Length: 234
Ligand SMILES: NC(=O)c1ccc[n+]([C@@H]2O[C@H](COP(=O)([O-])OP(=O)(O)OC[C@H]3O[C@@H](n4cnc5c(N)ncnc54)[C@H](OP(=O)(O)O)[C@@H]3O)[C@@H](O)[C@H]2O)c1
Image (cartoon, rainbow, N blue to C red; front, side):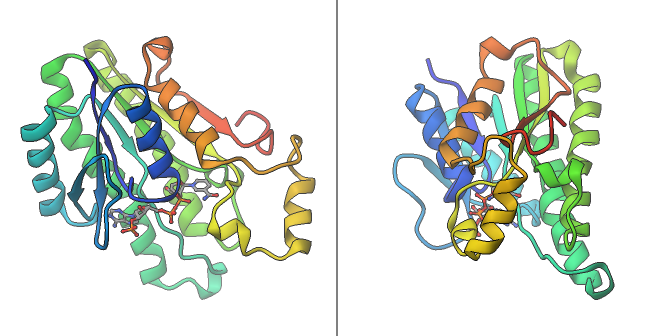
């Protein structure tokens, strides 16, 4: 019997690879999408994590169609990069609202069902930037390090109910975004990564699937880097 899994922002990028990894392992996977075409093969529910009512509607639909969410991957995220003095209130609040408050919202809602089940796995998709910092990424770094405090507090609150909460912190992932970087910038970034290469969405997805597996049942409150050594274990 597969578990009921939800991946927010599972329609593309890392989220889609995560959704595929769980599905390939035999789980029942729901993904959220905000518009356009949703990928086939998943229970696709419309949801914007900044809108509490769409979050509630998405969970109600998932509960009805595939049962309460046992595994939540809080993956939906955005960037609005710019230097501190140029960062507007809107640049700040939209990133915090999506990345941090959105993750709070979905984990709170998922925890309801997990408490009843007396088991659950919550994985927050953070970033090496959350612990390392990033010039031009004050908003993004704050949102991603905020996930660490959130996961650790949830781990303490819900551990006795068989619920784990962990953070996976990817480094540079090969996406359309990194493809567009100039060769010079790519060289600079790669020079800082001990493994000398970017990671793939699939490589990140396998770690996330593992953190949510029975094999990782005794891991909670942890930050697991998938960054080729860029953050040296942090
Ligand atoms: N790419 C990297 O190098 C990297 C490195 C470290 C960490 N990460 C983190 O990994 C996660 C996924 O990144 P990615 O590279 O796969 O990004 P991506 O390709 O830009 O995908 C982002 C996903 O989040 C969804 N999303 C954004 N805002 C949302 C909202 N308000 N409500 C619901 N869904 C929303 C998007 O949905 P739409 O399709 O509707 O826009 C999309 O599915 C993010 O949290 C990111 O910070 C990425």
